[in-house]
Figure 1 (cartoon, rainbow, N blue to C red):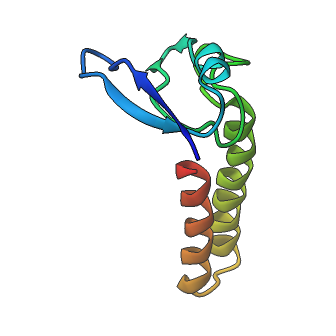
Figure 2: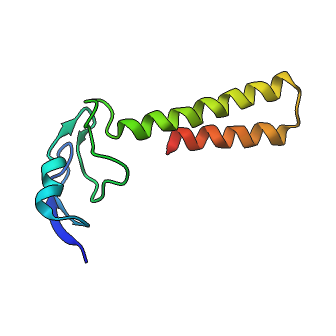
Length: 103
């Protein structure tokens, strides 16, 4: 079902094999890029090509879209405090912000 590729280690870590779900040549072609955070170690590109837009951000558009979640969560927490809402609403908005931060 998948292909096996040998990935070199990041920051001196050992090499390892990974199963990829696209032809080996195309995977190695677009993952040969090394960005600020090191070489690509993932066996699947879920959203977009790594380091295609910025040297510092592996998946640029995914990061930008998640910033919207983070900002909306923080805005919601602020509004909850301004309007003196129950703590459960603050918890919900903190959850949204955490999803934006960690996604």
